[in-house]
Structures are given as structure tokens and as C-alpha cells.
Image 1 (cartoon, rainbow, N blue to C red):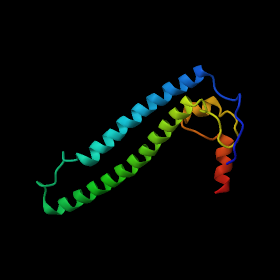
Image 2 (tube, rainbow, N blue to C red; image 1 turned 90 degrees about the vertical axis):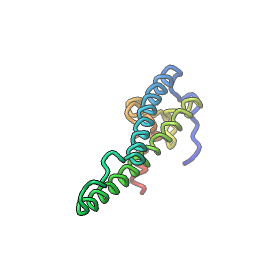
Image 3 (tube, rainbow, N blue to C red; image 1 turned 180 degrees about the vertical axis):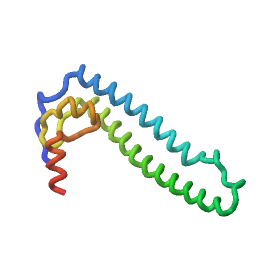
Amino acid sequence: MGIVNTEGKRYSDEELQEFKELILEKLAKAREDMKQFADAVNGSKGNDVMDTSPSFKLLEEGQSTLFKEENSRLAGRLEKYIKNLEAALIRIENKTYGICRETGELIPKERLMSVPHATLSYEAKINEKKKK
């Protein structure tokens, strides 16, 4: 990744505010989802297996372990998403939001509305995947 001159190429303050509001909404939702994952993993005492027969107890404990592992995996992805949204807020404050880190061109508004934490234009993202 080289240093790209982005002087004069940026979204207006009004557009940045619009993106900021979108990101703050998504961030609030993601944090609420993260809280629910944490509650599901830590507080799953609602359906205890103590009163079931021993043969079902083993199956229920295995299912519970799978559930916790899946929730942990999803929570990890959600944590990464939250960090990416927080980084996008910093780019908004720095007025560098929406500038492709590869080309220095503006990422289309439509892409940023659907993927507000994007740092690459669609074309740069495709090229990145081809290199891997």
C-alpha cells in the first residue's frame, strides 16, 4: 500500500455527518447484539439438565457446548465488526472516511451505505482477493 494524495478528494461535512449517524446506529445495534451473546454464553442456566435422566444429560451438555462455541465464534466476528465501525468513526473525525486506501479515490456512497466500515472500493477489494 503506497501513500496516495487525497487532497481535495473527500466527502463533505454534511455527508460525513450522515455516515456518522448510520455508523452510530449500526454500532449501537452491534453492541446490543454483543451483550445478548455474552448473556447467552454466561447466563445459560434457564434449562438446567439436573432433573433429566442421565442419558439425556450427556446429549444436552454436548448441545450446550456446541451452542457456546458457536456463540463465541459469532461474538468474535461481531467484536471485529464493532472495532471496524469504531475505526470508521475515527476516519470521519479525521475527514479521511470514504477514501479508498489503495487508489485514493472516493469509495461510492452506495458501497459505504451498505458496508460503512469499508476502506477499499469494490474494484480494489476484488483486486485484493485476486492477489491472495
